[in-house]
Amino acid sequence: MLVFWKARFVLLAVPKTGTTALEAALAPRADAAILNPPGLKHCGVAKYRRDLAPFFEQRGRRPLELVAVMREPVSWLGSWFRYRSRPGLAGQPNSTEDMDFAGFVDAYLSKQPPPFAKIGSQARMLAGGVDHLFRYDRPEQLYRFLEDRIGPLPEIELRNSSPARPVDLDDIRRRRLEIERADDFDLWRSLAAP
Image 1: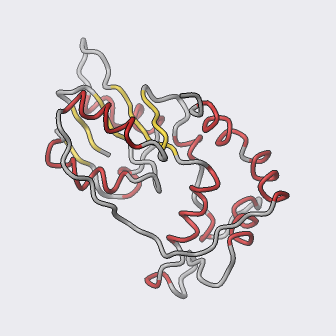
Image 2: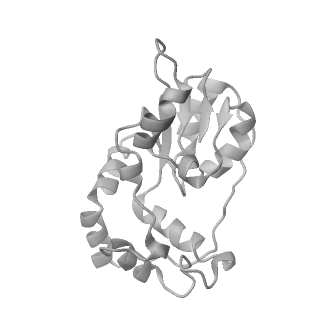
């Protein structure tokens, strides 16, 4: 999470949306950077407003605007699946190395997901609303916003690249996912308009 106090916004770090690359490029220009622990780096809207806003915001000033990036829900799950199949997690409870994407999605949708499928929800993280929500697949819109607020951007290099693995999903599972995680899909669709 990056706090741009002078520019009056906070860039929330939604996992698997490229925010680590943004943090690496923009942290030197931020007024505060929360990179660890992960529970604070990746805090959602509710936690920010409850725990961090009182620290960063001052009475009598307008609140800092919240900025976030969202990824298409199936692509987001695919990124988690691939990320958790990296060699460094081999043999760990949160590894997905010995399964296919369909099995990962089934586990994610189960009533009690196993450790490898406990990844939360983008909609839940963003619940309460952000002022500016950008699509992961349209980075130029986010970059324009950032440039308007903080000036020319440095080069933003890809970080946390995940291993290549197939993330095909059959129509039945996709429909189940759309029904059971409707909040994520509804939020994504709300961003679909140009």
